Length: 324
Image (cartoon, rainbow, N blue to C red; front, side, top):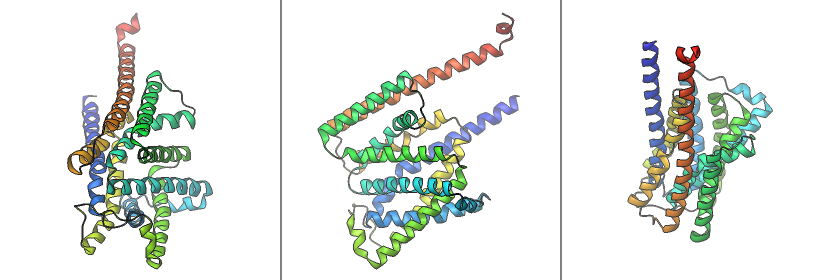
């Protein structure tokens, strides 16, 4: 039994490190997009769709999970993954543009909001019941966003689109109920085809890319060769954290994984203020504070529930309690 406990503990530590590694990559990703900020965001997005498809299919081949093409014969699967692919493409596009146009703070708000949006989707789509603290957290987050919208103006749409699209993406995948890796491969294949089509249109009508003009940052790469290498790397940058996330999800609880996910928006917050000179206004402070209070409320409630479960299991396993 001790050997099993040691193995479980080691597996959990590895899973924790994999989860942290995944969110570290996602957290520093804005730096990567800023290196590509001389390239129009729509073009970067199209290349990311294509190279993500290439690397995800290669990943499936590496782990010997290549049987996903049969899903193309299932209209429901095609509809599910086309929908999820379009949603995540919207999320990627807004994120790339926002990171490169001085709105990294709003992306941080968006990803802090994600767990609370997941709660809302659970209520609306899956008819889940909210716990008291989840209700408090939802109200606090809504108040924070409303205050930001009133005081700071329209920039809050970035946070809302990122949070809602990422939560909707998870809801569509959950509703579909298909295995994770084959589903990801089919989704990547469908979005890769869309990305390739966009690149083909862009080659014939280059003005299309200027619908969302490039906003070069001071660290933007000027070399076309290096730009192309970075565009190819978009696929790897997408596949690696997804692989780490999947591995971590198999080793640690979703509660722990849920709290690890705050690593990436925290890094984005620090990068925005400390390195890229974005202004942290009082409106940002109030919005962040209310969202953080909501997150803390849910976290404390989850921790107390875990303690109650552990005590109940301990009582059930104690022979003196059974005898009584």
